[in-house]
Amino acid sequence: MSRLYMARNPRVAARSLDGEMMIMSSRDSTLFTLNRTATILWQAADGTTPLDEIVEHRIVPEFEVGPAEALQDAETLARELASHEILQISEQPILPRNPVAGESWAKGSTTGESR
Amino acid sequence: MSVLLQEMSEKALKLNIPLSVQLDLTYRCNERCVHCYLDHDDHGEMTTAEIKHLLDEMADAGVFILTLSGGEIFLRKDFFDLLEHARRLMFCVKLKTNAVLIREREAARLRDLGVESVQISIYSHRPEVHDAITLIPGSLKRSVDAIRFLKSQGLKVIIANVLMTQNRHDYPGVRALAAELGVECTLDPTITPMMDGNRSVLDLAVDQGTLRQVFRDAALVGDVDEFCAIPAEPGESELNSTPCSAGHTACYVSPYGEVFPCVQFPLPTGNVRQQRFVDIWRHSDRMNEVRSIRLKDLTTCTSCTHVGSCTRCPGLAFMEGNMRGPSTQDCEKSFARTGVPSANMLAKKAAGSQGHANLGQNNLVQIRTLPSLSSATA
Image 1 (cartoon, chains in turn blue, brown):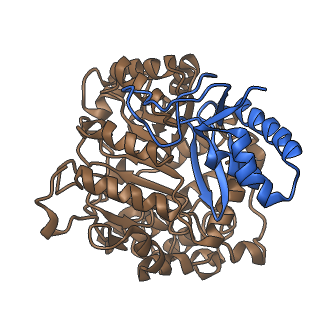
Image 2 (tube, rainbow over the protein chains, first blue to last red):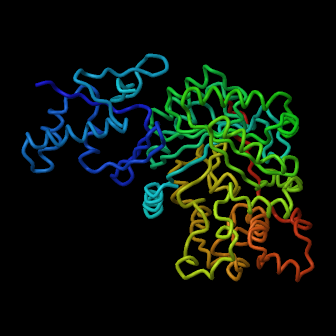
Image 3 (cartoon, rainbow over the protein chains, first blue to last red):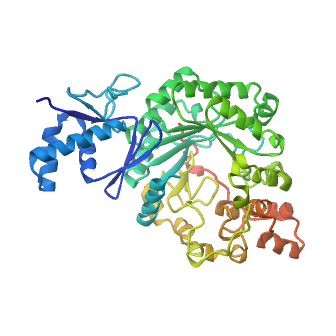
């Protein structure tokens, strides 16, 4: 079974407002707020940690849910976030790079394969 | 404003978080617009390091929407360095510029950095009118070329059209130009007094006839009957509401580090060169005074027919001498919309006042740099 990697889309804007993550899409300026699970995925999306590890270490302990069910839900959520270009997902690790100079950009964020 | 952004604003208001900040990077400019409220000298702009530190502080304070403006932002040699820093901090960055210095390369870089929108001042679709306002020959062509470059990169562009006597006939032409370019267009008839207190630029404001015409243009206001309707008497909840976002969820920082409730509200509340941004935001007595004002606290306006629907700007009122008083320009807008004079207009008429005639003598607070900091450079 292949693993899924996630990275934050560096073109979105994001801020936590009292624990609630606001995300502004750069594609069409749509504003999203993330629920607790989506916020965990967003914060953990460093491009190199596979989704199953994030689920095992960050989601299962917090939500009292079985690992298989949690992984399935998390993958669905990650793909939904990717469809809004909030996250990029890939079956390979996503290496950070600066969209302008090709240098290191920001920890945990990359340009996306989906763009 | 989207419903969700409205919800976030209400949450920020309850939590006392400055959701939105306009930061002017410089007052220097490569145009000399006849209506501009700024001087164009550098009195000691914040350095690159100072601005980056401020951006760090603002991100920590919860600022989400960051508008970078000026002056002309592209005159800062470190502009892209600052923009990259802002985007690393994941601000939603909006730019205000005349775009004269934006070519293909700059447009591509703005796209790569995930800028949310670029607002560009266009005064007319006719070069002879636009360039006569900017006082720079060829400026309309440069700005329109830049809009095309930005659009070709997929960026959101908004044309900002300030309405004044010189271009009062041209707003339909600007709207048509915006449609041709595939960009949004806003129209604003507000002229701001100069930062040194000089109110002579207010002579450029359009007259009642033009305002009435604009407010009855369905392409601009939508349902004209609804827009121009005489407002209902405000309820208690409206009277307990706040006048605008200035000082509540938004503020302004000058190139010299001074913090104000709004770019159009020159009440100094502190300087980020001397205090942390968040401390000024939370603890400035002046900011808290602005924050304390409700519609029911306004002096003349509380008894005015328009109090519940007026666009009254507390900053313009402040520049007339009283932050709890009326803003004459907004009285004139309410009158143009509805045909009903404001309480302020009636009071002035009763007192034999002549509109703007004595406003220039009112006490004005100026935006000015601190003398001890004037040696700092960008």
